[in-house]
Image 1 (tube, rainbow, N blue to C red):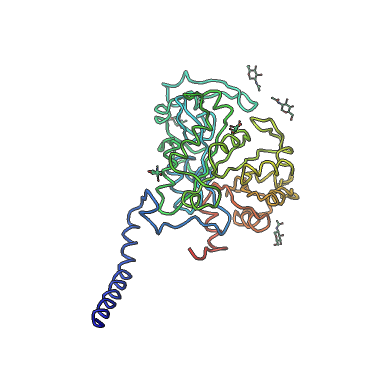
Image 2 (tube, rainbow, N blue to C red):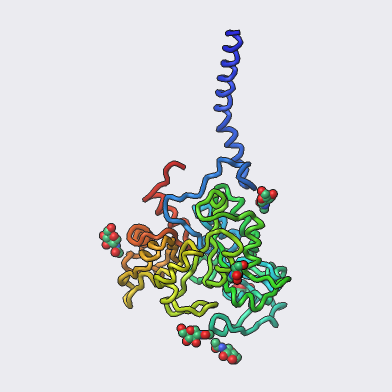
Length: 381
Ligand SMILES: *[C@@H]1O[C@H](CO)[C@@H](O)[C@H](O)[C@H]1NC(C)=O
Ligand SMILES: *[C@@H]1O[C@H](CO)[C@@H](O)[C@H](O)[C@H]1NC(C)=O
Ligand SMILES: *[C@@H]1O[C@H](CO)[C@@H](O)[C@H](O)[C@H]1NC(C)=O
Ligand SMILES: *[C@@H]1O[C@H](CO)[C@@H](O)[C@H](O)[C@H]1NC(C)=O
Ligand SMILES: *[C@@H]1O[C@H](CO)[C@@H](O)[C@H](O)[C@H]1NC(C)=O
Ligand SMILES: *[C@@H]1O[C@H](CO)[C@@H](O)[C@H](O)[C@H]1NC(C)=O
């Protein structure tokens, strides 16, 4: 009897040792496949870091690659993005796509497509008349024949004409298929304009279709819940009523974007002063987990391009338990205030250490990532 027990125990030891030896090989085998559909298949998938301010890849790594393309998002993930960010608008046939502008003119080759030359229109949107090729006048199939190009002439032009505009679903799949957990940060873009020009069956709205898409891919859960950590998501909008609508349809965290101090909200026509008052912050904190302000409204530069005195918005937002994720950090000299000595690392140091932000929208994910890796390496992952 004693001998049998000993043999069983020995067998167990050997089994444990064998498993221990093979574990690295197993995890290596898993790692060889770059795409994972679900968490169970890949228990070792690196979680979202939550030790330092979020690195939010603004329109992908658009400092390098034409904005909102699959390639710009994949570059951002390779460079260390915590979240990939996108503007979700709609086509004439009601498909949601990743595209920032109302018109296709500035970042695609639409002007070279003679088959669309009768498609130019003038519409009023957000208080101005704009003329061009509007995305809402093109079907998804037509949009897919276009190719993206770089917005700014001083950035790399060598990717122009190569990449397509992608759909919201394609964007989501890029995040879900990443080797580590990468969050998404989609914006309900220009909802007043989109709802005026695009119609969905059953009277559904841009906000409804947007949230339905997220639910279809199982995005759910309050900020920092276990479900949220598996598929991290922030829904952003400049339009308070779109956020109220979304809050009725999902418990996912919402972010209120803040435009320039001179711009009223597109739906409720509220001023910047109104929506940043303590009273409003108290009210909106029942719906949203944070604010996305333009950084130059928090620390306005003076006429010599030096920082002036910061406002107290971040302190007041934190007092209402709201996150603050300012936009947009860019490496180029022309975007850096002179206090930073033409050094983007000094700008990140200021916003992280002096201003205590919780996340940053950057055109150069790689730069922010390296700064954070060098100054506050992650522990315990
Ligand atoms: C249109 O084509 C011309 C010549 O091929 C090219 O130089 C130009 O950049 C293109 N325009 C756009 C908007 O892509
Ligand atoms: C846009 O153009 C229309 C037609 O010319 C005009 O009635 C309207 O006032 C313009 N809107 C703005 C904001 O300029
Ligand atoms: C969402 O979750 C359900 C139930 O767990 C699962 O059957 C379905 O495949 C998931 N969908 C996606 C797109 O992951
Ligand atoms: C949210 O739901 C409530 C209750 O059903 C409803 O009264 C309200 O109008 C909804 N708000 C929005 C913006 O959809
Ligand atoms: C929006 O509010 C401003 C005052 O902040 C007012 O001048 C303007 O007429 C309003 N616009 C609309 C469309 O109500
Ligand atoms: C940031 O804070 C440090 C002290 O922690 C201070 O020395 C520095 O002047 C501050 N930077 C700016 C631009 O205010």
